[in-house]
Structure formats: structure tokens, C-alpha cells
Image 1 (spheres, rainbow, N blue to C red):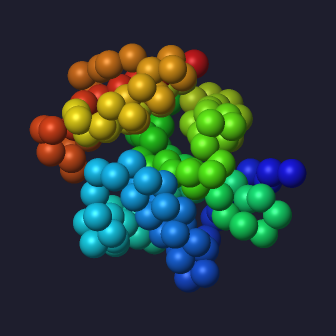
Image 2 (cartoon, rainbow, N blue to C red; image 1 turned 45 degrees about the vertical axis):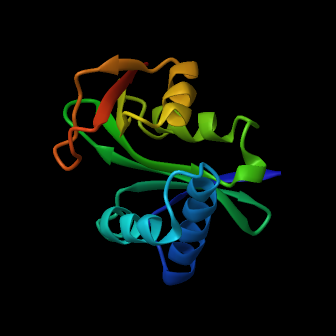
Length: 153
């Protein structure tokens, strides 16, 4: 049985578990190496955890298998900052549940925004299957080689 749990304060053990899920999910895509991914995790994800952005973790018993981090954006929008699911748990609807969970967490939420690299067809395909559409959204902290997506409730 899977458990979805919002994490308010992330401790060092959870941070290590999140890193392991992140590395496993993205190394499987064979796009970046472990050093690049670890650097990204330290530069982008750790600060999000430290500032208390909404983090939803998915567990299979005691094992962390996936997570999503949301940042409150303008109006009733949320920015899906990060998401990862262990490869052996992918294609089971867990990613979809993680993405749409923000609508359960905040009944007033209207839009989910995100960016992904232009050459990351895997992510683009996943989000398009969920109903996300290309948009002009651009996160100010990401370079121009990222494209925006949005989904309205």
C-alpha cells in the first residue's frame, strides 16, 4: 500500500532519501551523470527544502519511492519545481498522483506551472499525457533552454 504524505520539515535522513530517488530517476534517463545531478540537487532542491516549500513524498511501506515539490506562485498558481519517482515504480500512476495532489492540498489552486529542458522529450511526453499545454511561462531562475508548460484545473 502506498502512502502519500506532505512533509513539513525535512530532516537529514529524508534529504538523503530524496537524493537517492532523484538520482535513481534521472540516471535512468541516461542524460546526466551523477556529479551533474548531485550538483543540481544541492543547488536547486536543497534550498527548496530549507525554505519549506510544499513537499509531497510517496512511500511504499518505509521506503521513499517518489516526491514532488511545489512552490506557491502568483495568484492561485503553483509551480511544480521538482518531481521524481524511482524507475521500478514508474508507469503506475504515482507521478500523476504527485502532480495533481496540489489540487487536493489547496482547494483554491487553479493552475500548475512547470518548466522542462527543451531536449527532455521524456518529461515533455509525460506532462502532455497529463494534459499540460505548452505555455510562455518561464521561471526566472532557469536558462532559455527550458520550455514552459501549464495545466488548468
